[in-house]
Length: 302
Image (cartoon, one colour):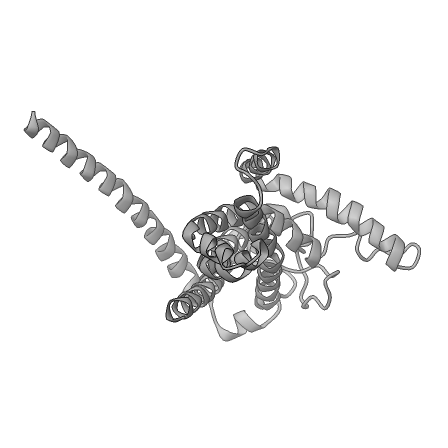
C-alpha cells in the first residue's frame, strides 16, 4: 500500500511539473519567435518616426506614445476606484449585507464579460451619452468634440475593464492586515477613518501596487475595447488633448495583420511592433514592481 501511494505521488508530481514546465516552454518559445522576427526591424528611426502612407515605411512612435498614455490614464483612473471599493468592502460593510453581495456579484460579472462588450459599453455610455452631454454644455452648437472616440473615453473604458482585477487583489491585501493592528488603533482612540488611513493603507500598499501591475498587464495589450472608443488606424501625429484620437500598438498590429494588402511585406513590422509592445508592458510592470519594493522596504524600516 505504501509503495502504491509513493508511486502515485511520484506520478502526480511528475505530471504537474511537466505541465508547469510546458507552459513556461510555450511562453519562452513565443518570446523567441517574436524576438527573432522583430529584432532586426527595430531601429532608432523605427521607434522615433511616425508611420507613412502604406504603413510599410516610417516608424511607430505615435503608437508607442498612445499606448503609454492610454495605460497611464487607465491606471490612474482605475486603481484608486478599485482600491477604494476594496477598502469599503473590507472595512465598512458586513460580509452578509446586501451591499456586499451586490458588489461582489457585479465584480464577478464584470470579470467574465468579453472585452468587446466593454468597447460597446464605452461607445454607448462615454461617447454617445456623456460625450454628447458635454458637447451640449461646453462646445458650440453643432460641434463634436467629446461625442466622438478619443483618448479619455478609451482610457475610462479600459479602467472599467480592469476594475475586477484591482478590486480582488487589493481586497486580499487589505484582509491580510492583522486585525490586532486595527483593534490597537481603535483602542488608542483613533477613528475608523484614521485607522484605515494610518494603519490599513500603509500595510496594503504592496497589494495596491500589485493591483496596478495586474491592471497594466491586462489593459496594455487589449484591442477590442478601444476599437470603438478612441483608437485610430493611421494618425501620424501625437494626441494634443484628451479629446483626440490616438494610435495603439496592439491595434496597429491587428490592422497590419488583417487589413494590409501585402501581409508578407508588413510581417517584420508586425513582429517588431509586438516586441515593442511587450517591452513597453514589461517596462511599466518593472516600474510598478520597483515602486512596490521601495514602499515595502520603507514600511519595514519604519
